[in-house]
Length: 116
Image (cartoon, rainbow, N blue to C red; front, side, top):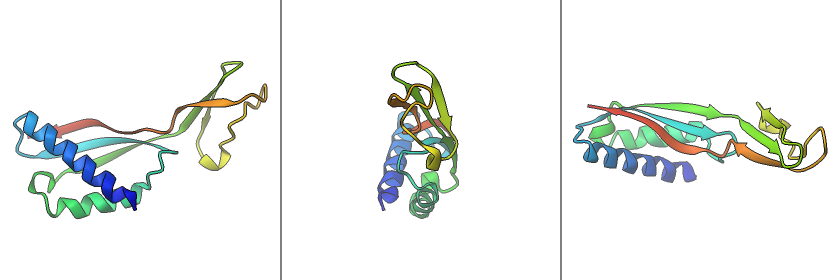
């Protein structure tokens, strides 16, 4: 379960942000997670909640998730396609039958942090 390691890394980044900004605690953090990032969101939230019990500075942190659908662009005709469901993900352009390049959907990043 790599979500535990990801949650630990998120906590380490939040600790660095807290220390660099002279904060006492982190009140909220927002993560952007792509549909094909390989992250199981429920498992990540579970792991984060387990770590919260051990770390006072994130005890009351609200972890927000922005889910990013897959977006791909045709390498030949330049058309872009968005996939709401990864089951629908086809990496061939439906118009010209050439390969698609993924431009969104692999994200795993902290995009906002608030503290006091």
